[in-house]
Length: 100
Length: 478
Image (tube, rainbow over all chains, first blue to last red; front, side, top):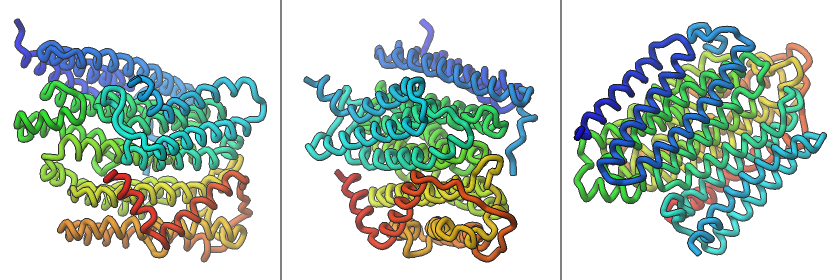
């Protein structure tokens, strides 16, 4: 039996990797994947909590998070495509039209 | 029976969703795009009327197994959202024609976003709150980038999307921690579990509180989390900017108020300590950086950041009366801000952005009415009586003084004086400079209605402040 705290630690570590990736990666696709990593780390802890609390809510939430993440991916990639058509770059440092 | 009651209580939202979906279909069928705006406005009016009737017949309470509340608190915010939505549609008609934006998608996304906000304001379950927030956010990401050929609009959408998705992951992590701690996502059950299990002092509770504040801070553009706001507000189409600075901001405050007061009510000391420096920093950053802006949309973005800071003071003081003054402030800010953006939108015409401060030089000579309107809105944003902006700030400051936060009020009042510089600079340009070239306005009947409504409300609330304040108080205390 794996104790709950292991799952929570795994989730926290993956979440932190996601946050660091978001802040440090300069490639927009990688930044996008970092957000997905954050959402999936949350799914790990939700599923673990759901199992240990014997409550179904957590697993329902996992499905909702997956659904929302899919919608988010669709919209995010669409925005990225629209952007790329006008500015052929996916480097975060080169997106600097708006500043001041 | 209980299903029927649930359906009735969420019928305003359902009607809005129906309106949005039928607008998407109508887009293929009708040729004149003005019809879509009329159809959309009709749907919104029906939904608002149904909501009003439900309040009148005394419908109240929770529904869908306690996930959704139909109460005065939600209804006050819904009024803000309905008004924002209608004003945005009225201001957009001409702009859409100039920018050649597809009207059906645009209006239905606006309505979907509003449904998301209404769900946020009414949610009494963290799950529902998250879904409402995502519905609002995902629709607004697209709206920010709806001018696909415009690089600035692309970039605004991209930045908004990445930072928005980042912040909602934080919200979700906060929700997960609370769920793991208490075994529930219902706000009331969480509050009672935190109380009965003596978890209020637990570090995990504090951690989730910090995650919640971070996520809401992103949504309402509080100071360390505000970096996205100026870029997004500048790049997005102006009506969308007006919408974003009023609706989603108020929705952020609505969930913030509900979560902080209902769930973390026992931790009021702690969240006040966290929020107080954020409020000061937000007001300072917004007011100081706005001084150096020459793009009026960017200036209004920083002004919007500063105003979020003022509204936050009502939450910092942590009393119910304080939050009533925040609600009052949000309503007033929405109206005057929509008005100011309305004038900015009118300056836009084909091949001319009308966003630079120089474009306002000598506006009063050519267009005295538009300049007078802008004057009223700028005075109101500064907080000069007898406009509504003064009343909003006055009540916030008064409640803060009653609660003993005198230093906070002194700092806020000082920065309010600083903000007079950049608001009145617009007035100075309009009235005291010579016009540089020919200025023509893209006026339309619909924009005229929206601006007339905004200016009348700003003056009426400024002269009879108790009307709105009593309404906010009755809504909050039920």
